[in-house]
Amino acid sequence: MKKISDFIPNKVIEKKQHIDKLDDILSAGVEDNLRELMHVINYSENSITIECASSSIASILKFEREKYLELFKNYGMYNIQDLKIKIK
Image 1 (cartoon, rainbow, N blue to C red):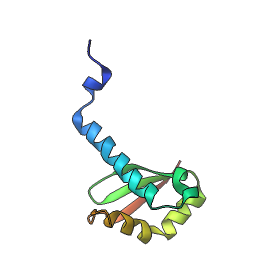
Image 2 (cartoon, helix red, strand yellow; image 1 turned 90 degrees about the vertical axis):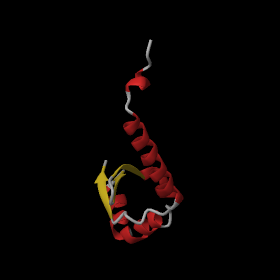
Image 3 (cartoon, one colour; image 1 turned 45 degrees about the horizontal axis):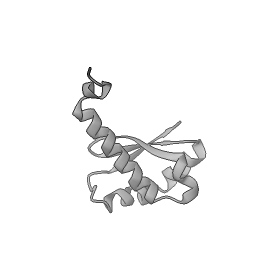
């Protein structure tokens, strides 16, 4: 009998692993009190979508957008030029 995971395309698995890697990078670059309040939920060639737990966290992220873009560029992601912010 096949497992459910056998039916998940490799493309989907790889994207999930890449999102987890981006989330780890974000977590490493934020203060301890913000770690659990923002997560990477998607990405494209030139942007990353981050979900925030509240509008106040989203505001912090918007005002410090350059800091977080620089964080990803420090990990070699020079093509990332925009952060999209979503409130949970």
